[in-house]
Image 1 (cartoon, one colour):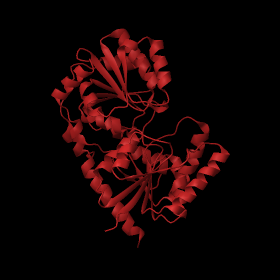
Image 2 (image 1 turned 90 degrees about the vertical axis):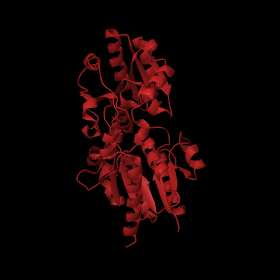
Image 3 (image 1 turned 90 degrees about the horizontal axis):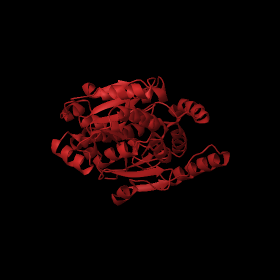
Image 4 (image 1 turned 60 degrees about the vertical axis):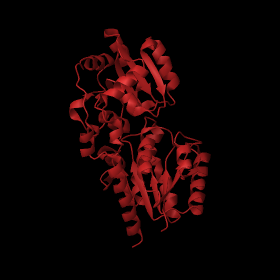
Amino acid sequence: MQKIKILYVLTVLNKGGLETMIMNYYRNFDKTKFEFHFLVHRVSGYFENELIGDGAFIHRASPLSFSFRNFIKYRKELDIFFKNNHFDIVHVHNNSFGYFPLKYAKKNGAKVRIMHSHTSALKDDVKKILLGKLLNKKIPTVATDLFACGDEAGKWMYKNKKFEIIPNAIEVDKFAFNPEIRNSFRENLSAQNTINIVNVARFNYIKNHLFLLEVFAEIIKKNGNYKLFLVGDGELKSQILEKIKKLKIEHNVELLGIRNDIPEILQAMDVFLFPSLFEGLPVSLVEAQATGIQCVISDGVPAESILVKENVKVISLKENAEQWANKILEIKNFERKDVSKTIKEKGYDIKENAKKLEKKYRELLTLSKL
């Protein structure tokens, strides 16, 4: 039986929330029935070696910018790429700019073309916002099917068009609370005798790290027994380091970089702090909740992201750093417990969801041939 060829289109295969979600699904797909290709817009990424070693194919396109010359070159590249490569299914994970690969996939005969929304806003770049709004309106003209990570992300991109939610599912059992792992990793991180706050996110604007550091500085003023661990990397790293130095909190903050032991790190922590300006439905928050940790999130994070209500505190972004700090300091005597059953019941187990998405792909392909 011939394998179904699927192309995933995304910016880069680094270890961000979107890429982690894609890899969670990819690792649980039946590779005897599907052949996977990835079209990326940067030179290399964290997951590429794993994918290539597993038999997947990596293709590259130029990054898209607002340069007229680049824009013409990018469109020509896409046209040539889809002329020379046939795929049964094209599944696009870019934001609004995913319109372009979908357009040329349609032009060159791809029957199933899926747009997948992962955010509920664009950055505060006026040109990007205006173009994004225009492209969002045009996406249904080039996509055969509309997916989203959550309700807010779908409504933001597709407005009143019908879309299907594909959960940002995880390997729940890997994150289930385990006191032995917790104690072991607290020792590994030299964090046995401190109250530990963690943020797991790419170092970019929407994750609001600079405000997070201001909040933590206010916490330290009131209680010096706290430590902050930042997991991730990105374009704002130099600004984050500068801010840490300016706030004089170097001795209480550790940057752990990009890690492959996120479940264990989350076990060791006491508070997951997530003051994002906006989100689609963050994978890292799903992972954190699965470990039973107390989560403190902003009102920029969709309410549908809250899976274990009693473990999540929401604070408005209108409140200042001191107000945030005071509310975090109120968290005391929190009883950690295994909530993995709840996460599975809410529909976020990857094994079940991967099977559902495989079935969906086959159904869409069958319908496209009628």
